[in-house]
Length: 441
Image (cartoon, rainbow, N blue to C red; front, side, top):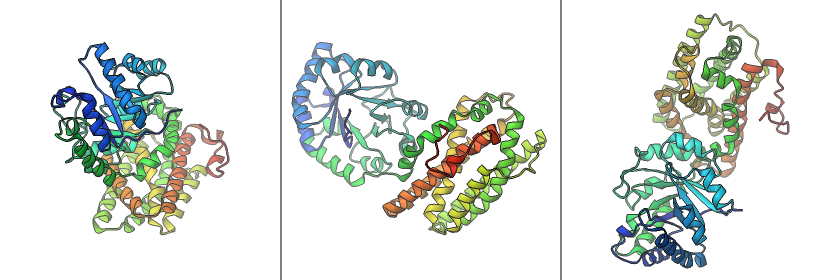
């Protein structure tokens, strides 16, 4: 079984930047300063030389229990009995690397965009390198930089530990670590330092002082199976393909009309609970724009397809409405916020997912799809996540646990809501009421 990794200060070697010093000396000094994991990167070295270097570093690092990761080359990692391999998007496929290197070895994977990250979430990798965060002269063949906001988005959605790659140094470490990243991958800031030990010490101090765990990151990882199950639902996939039967879509819209009559008043009540005038104004604006956008979209589709919205409440809708209303009525702003978040965050992620896969041309549900995956909605959701992460960081552990529990209940209601739209009363929804009841996924 692979052990948890300390990724906080991740050294990536580059002999060309090491000021003519032997690589082993630079690594030894860096480790003395606090480097926690080392990647040997030798793109141009002959295989024999690469293996020789790897064996020397293994001899140095193994007694210190510091993992040695080999960049790209599975054969070199096997020859040196290194601790693992780091691969990029154009390297050998993860499945092939795992088959060759075995299940007790580490595999790290670079992701260059959010699509790569979503694929990585389906793999048994040990960490992902988010690359590049900033532009860097040490790698010129990289994708569009994530930037700090993009890095934070990726960290929130990764179910694996994360390392920021590209432009990591003493000037950027603080901001990068405050996004919730598990560590930074450093090249020139250590390899080219006159004193690698001191450089590593200073970087490790910055990393440790600014290490941040986002509540949103924790709750996403905790409830990721629910999100995965939602993406596999027939309702979602047929909606994306434009083949969803109108009666099923109408069933969903009818219940959604009943749900939103409760949800938006609760949203405005939650806005009143915001901690600052700025956050209150921001949340109120998000609530108004969301309500107006959904009303326009609903009214258009209701009229276009003659959907009857005079329908009785389903047990699913009633359960979800009561969960939200009770959370808001409790006047506990943290609990209310966490309960209402899935309807924003999960809807946005599902909308973005469908937009990537949907057949939009002649899709009868195009307006629904574009409503939840548009840029303005995504921007609003990210702003809301920033607020709730700040709140969570400032409260106690018991409250954070309660926030996670009620978010999970609400996420299950989201799953049930789409399932009811497709299956109606043919399915059993006891899992909404009894935590011991078997889940449908």
